[in-house]
Image (cartoon, rainbow, N blue to C red; front, side, top):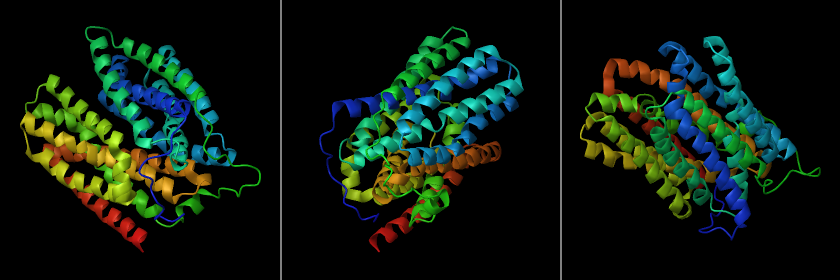
Length: 393
């Protein structure tokens, strides 16, 4: 499909049930992430893992995202991503329950790998269904997706209050409840916008998808832009502690970035209509060129808080640009694989390599390691410009 497909300013009215069920799935997914990112390392350390072992166990879940394109391929061929998402959510619940029954580095590592392989493909499967509904004009993707970001902020905040003064074992109980909610939400997911019937052409191989016009440049841009967040995700809190920002204020810095993200998702489709998906990717890269060097230089809480507003550019614009680019440029039979590749390259490979690199840089240069993230954003801008030039051609 041509990258010059028209982007509607407003989608046609959607059935409330379809939008609500997708929003419920995003709430459940990002509610789990709101528990996992800040509190799961605390639980694993409570179970006896030292820092080196903890890094390995957490890293396994990141690399598990590489499985997403292959589960997406299965969903493309069978036309039942909602059913596959439910099966994977059930497996996630079972593996999460297994953490209460095992201990020691190797068993926890294997269980983390299994749960990561089960959970990682669920988000791109849900994204694929949402992209299909958006392409059919039934939902506004950004306004549905924003509920996930809102859930992340709420669950992270509530989880902190709930854990205060209590045993880290409570983290597992909360994560089990979140896993059960995820399973319930996937059972309510709608069928995809266009199922592949017996008369439809086969979706082709992963290699054929990678040969499609622009997709390799698109994935390279995503890798640079998503990878540029590595320093923030791995060492942002430690850097802010080092420059004297109190922990109570650091929580506000994280929350504010996601709040801005929610706001941009609410109006994002109008921006896409004006800037096109490639323009959104370009804006995301330019946001990183500004944001990361500023975080290396500034030490005042007020200025850092203001800089965190750029999360709306570096992440939200990138994600909206990516989802709409897939909507416009990838034929429906390959959408699930495309969203899987987006997650595998951006959240799997880019962060899987970027976080260890950030560790080396942070150890040597402290906050100045953010300048390397700025360089990643510069390269991402160049790829976005190339993608935009191809669209105009």
